[in-house]
Length: 138
Image (cartoon, one colour):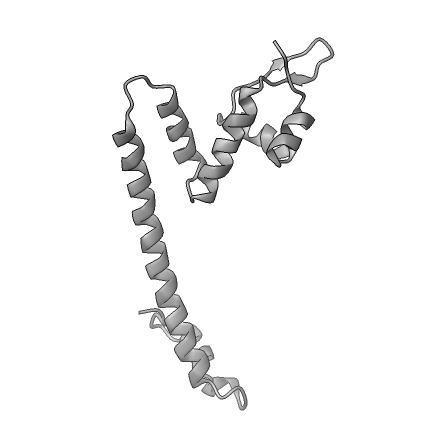
């Protein structure tokens, strides 16, 4: 069987060798076999698995969620519904984050517009919002 060294896998995936080792420690990647010279020997399928991980991360999935998705790949009883449910949950989480970011944006926009940018800090609406007991993000 043809094996790849970690540097080759890193080159083909665009990941660093340290990231690949980290994924091994986190259980995202199976531990590779050791070659007679002591180097890690990766099966060519490792490249596809790491590319899967990269794409899932770009969609916002956490390593825990990616580990879960990877387990579905090897589960003969898993279907599209199982994958869709996880994607829908991630989408809802992202939509909530966007809503929270929009609230923060609005609050900062209002505060920066209200601040004259000169004078004493005690009259700056930004400063007041930060030291006041009320939450500036509504």
